[in-house]
Length: 329
Image (tube, rainbow, N blue to C red; front, top):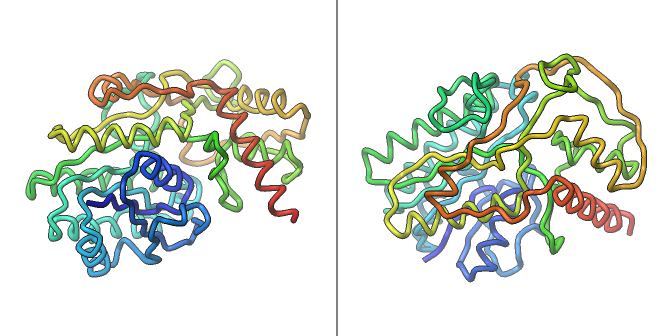
C-alpha cells in the first residue's frame, strides 16, 4: 500500500517524501511543477505531473498505486500574493482540494493528512495560540486553508474519512543531509531571503513593519525546522493507522523570534554584514503568532529534535551555499 504526497516536489513536500522513503514507505507524488522540482524527489519515487483538481486523474492514480493514505501539501502559500490575487488562492488551495477529497472517498482511501497553517488564526488574542482559538484569517491564504479544513471535516463525518489537520507555523531550514531544501525562485520566507542576502544573491533585505507592539517593533514568529515538521506527519500517519480519531493540531515550538533577531542570527552565522531596509507593514501580517503545540506532542508522541534557531539558520545557509555552487557550474 502506498502513500500519495501531493506537492511532493516542493519544499515541505520534498522533505516529506525523503522522510517516508527513509522509513521504507512506498510513495507516489503528484505535482504540477509550477514551484517544485523533479530533482527534489528520490529517483525511485514515481512522479505524476498533474493537478490535484483533476478528479479523474486523482482517482485513477489512487487505484493504480493502491493508495492507502494521502498527505496533501499542494497549494499556493504566499500571504502577500494572496491579498493581490485572492481568486487564484481560492482556486488552487480550496477548489482544487475538493476533487482530491472526493477521489479519496471514491477510491476507498480512509487516511488523510492536510497541510494547513497558523494563518487561520489571524492575529490571535492570546499567545501562544492553541487549537481552541477562534479562526480569524487576515488573508485569502489563511481563508483558503480554513475553507479546506471545513470541507475535510464535513467529508470526514459523512464518509468515514479520518484525518489529521496540521497547522504549521513558520517553516524553515533544510535537510541536514542536504538532499533538499527551499529552492523556490523569488521566495518570500524570511530565513530564505536573509541567507540569500548574506550570500550576495540579493542586494538587501526589507523589513516590513517596525511599529508592531513587540519588543523591537518587528513581527514575531515561531520558526519550526522542516525536518521536525516532516516527522510530525509520519507520527500523524502512524496515529491514523493505529485507529486514532480525526484531529486538528498545531505544529510549532512554542517560542518566537522577531524579524530583527532572525536577521542578526543569519549575520552571525554567515560571518557577514548586509544591508537591511526598513519598510511599511504588509497587508495580512499579524504582529505575533506562536504555537501552543502540547496536543501534537501528547496525541502523536511528536518530539522535535531540531528546536534551535541557530541550527535552522545553519542548515538553511548550508543548503543555499550548495545551490549557489551547483548553479555556478
